[in-house]
Image 1 (cartoon, one colour):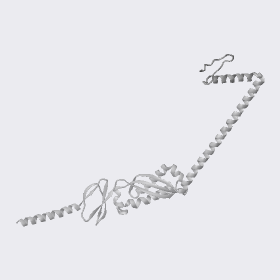
Image 2 (cartoon, rainbow, N blue to C red; image 1 turned 90 degrees about the vertical axis):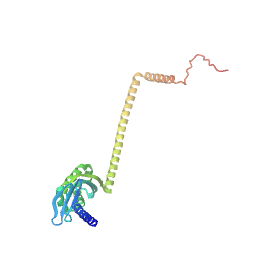
Image 3 (tube, rainbow, N blue to C red; image 1 turned 180 degrees about the vertical axis):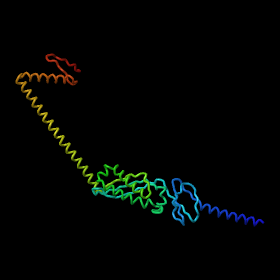
Amino acid sequence: MAAKVFESIGKFGLALAVAGGVVNSALYNVDAGHRAVIFDRFRGVQDIVVGEGTHFLIPWVQKPIIFDCRSRPRNVPVITGSKDLQNVNITLRILFRPVASQLPRIFTSIGEDYDERVLPSITTEILKSVAARFDAGELITQRELVSRQVSDDLTERAATFGLILDDVSLTHLTFGKEFTEAVEAKQVAQQEAERARFVVEKAEQQKKAAIISAEGDSKAAELIANSLATAGDGLIELRKLEAAEDIAYQLSRSRNITYLPAGQSVLLQLPQ
């Protein structure tokens, strides 16, 4: 009797385990920000896109392919040429995500690694096309315009593959060694030209100052000559008195000067 009970319990447990395995294989989860595409062994990829949550499928017949539909960053470095044939190193940062409704077509025509297959090629194509429209100098001075044109062209190109670009930005822009050396040489030449122009302007100002000073001295000499001719030696005597007065004033302010009155005897109290 007990043996039959244990045998029944064992059969029930085995059946329960088999049922649990079947149920578990018939369930799958789609996490937040993800979508699923169902591949049917008999009918191929289904057109229905499954949203977030837990869902049922037919075990061994259907298989879920999970796609991340959140925005993801990717850096794409490109070496290209400008309109004036200068080598340009550009790095483009892209925030991309797939169009959820087009996931079945993306999986069928491109595959799960659609970003590896699509983004590098179309980014290189667009960057080379836009960079060829600008000179090396314009790529620097009109960087905002270049970035906007790259973003517009790349967004339109990516849409044909079922991709949405949330942000496109130029994060790195450098030029070849020859162009960098040429820019440095140009800056040095401009600085030398500015220095030479400053020297010339300074010499001109000094020349004008010397001319004005010479004219002033000439005018002063002429005035003095006229005064001497009019007043005779009186002007010279006046200048002597003014000079003597000035000297006396300066000496009176000095502590090391002692005045002894003329014609008077002065007693000095010297120690015996």
